[in-house]
Length: 427
Image (cartoon, rainbow, N blue to C red; front, side, top):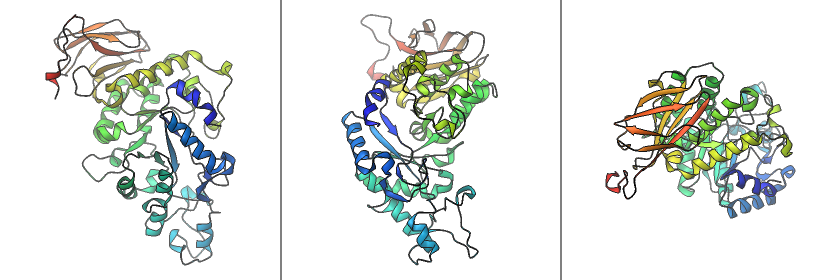
């Protein structure tokens, strides 16, 4: 049914669709595969996936699938063969004489694959006919890898190296529900290209719920930039909710702060990942309640939130600084309760100063900006239309942002026949 909803996704501004596992499995969630090379009939089988790929590509959209390298169903033929002492499969799992075996977080229905076994790596990602490469060759664009901490950094590095030879444009991203700096070290053996940025989600929710202050919020962004590296951060997914978590509106009931969360998701470095229904203010509880079907009845939607989400998605897509710019954290220099950061590409004129004031009082302060290419006299306009215009004055900016509100200041030139941002100043 997704093909029939692509107009909806295009209207929202979606460019990439991520699906949780679609391969044959006994459960609804499909993280317990019995066959990695066939789409479960409940989703329409292989033909339905190929129709979806074709329809997405025709619109310039891409598809990311979910790869579970760590474990399979206890009904998988590989595991059944291993327990039957099949010589070809006994090394694929960790089996014990008492009949027990390694299984994911103690769930006996999810036996863990032995990823130290070359034959397992071959069938999962190394060979051209492996799980990962098989589907990339059939039009899948990218992969997200489940439970990265169990897959391991060494396997992640091997996946990126091996798969990248044949599919250099595929983004390979891992799931880690916390800080992921060691997985994305620049200049060292890489892990995945990016990670699900639960670090940002945790910081955003803790801040908006009053569990941490703005000092920690600003520090969390700085820590991610230092630990993930710019490329790792830009390739990671910024998320506010997933199939494993309660939804944003269920955790942050204040509509003003929900808007601030969306503002952070779309302006912090990384790729915004929108869990279906979040754009309409969908409410659900913890997993499995969080996996309720999409609510298509428009009378159930928060139309103001949807308009806000669409505007932020469009804003990000219109400005290079918000897509791939570096980040300079500034908010912990100011009084009050604000996250402030500058996104910049290094090209003069491609910048955005983002201010999120989570305080209950207006943020009225002068900000010293250690950035060379916003010259004296550069005019700044809030792209959101919420804060009054301001101006750079000898490296200082006067901020005036309302309580529980935000601004995205973009530079402009107030003069005719003159520009501050001359090409000869570019690096």
